[in-house]
Image (cartoon, rainbow, N blue to C red; front, top):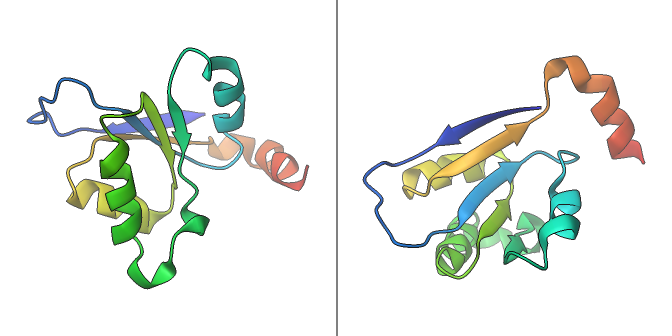
Length: 110
């Protein structure tokens, strides 16, 4: 698994959730199960948002929870990542290694 962090170093808020854009199968549900009692974790499913105003409504939802959660899992789709960058919301992108393609395809099928 690989990750890349996109940060705005001018952002000096006291508490801000870690925003994590993670591909399917990279451990979001597992992390939630292991840490939900010690952290406030949101899994913001982009498929639940009205597509007429997407990604603006999705980004607004994320902004509304930045000071309320410890971690916000968000969509890893390019349109969302571009909108996060445009909104100056720092995030970490988690994605599988190309070497693990078969492993991830198996995870998606199960």
